[in-house]
Length: 59
Image (tube, rainbow, N blue to C red):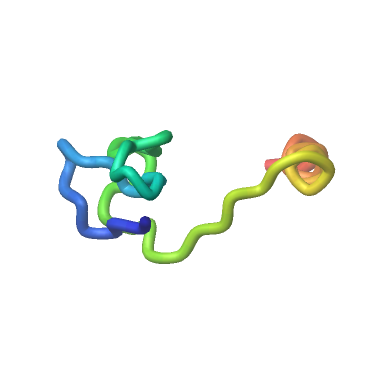
């Protein structure tokens, strides 16, 4: 679930199962604030590829 106007004391993204148990949450207010309106979670090869590309970005 995306919660882009969560406020600083609530997670911006979280996942729940059918029994309404929270499986995980992303709570990085200092990093994204109320600005996380669109998101995509990457795993495996996609995550590794993105991490490699980000690491190679020069400031």
